[in-house]
Image 1 (cartoon, rainbow, N blue to C red):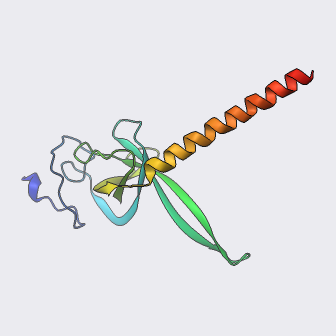
Image 2: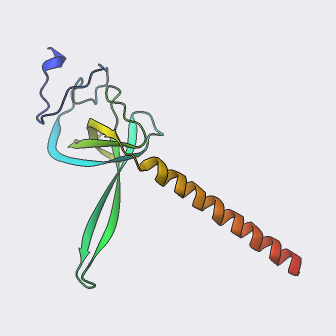
Length: 144
């Protein structure tokens, strides 16, 4: 069977690299379903896995306003696609691959330009909170 012509059921470009992963929809035996999601990769710490974050709004009828939500989903990251932290990707639903993974990345769209700035701002806010706590502790110790 020629892997270059494999149809996964959704029209996406085939990856340029080839992999030997059994859980890859392009080069392995994995069948995918029609449900797709688009989000940003926030973590790639584990082997062949990633955390995908989806941001959406939900209407709260009691207050007649919208609420921001973020959903984090574990996805399989095949070696042929190999998405990095901060990439915008499309993932498709598949059979459960593990306890927490039911989606697989099928397309890497590109980098999120603001992701790096968000990460830096988050780290800065953590440092400021720690500095303030240290100052408060020193003031309390000198009063005693």
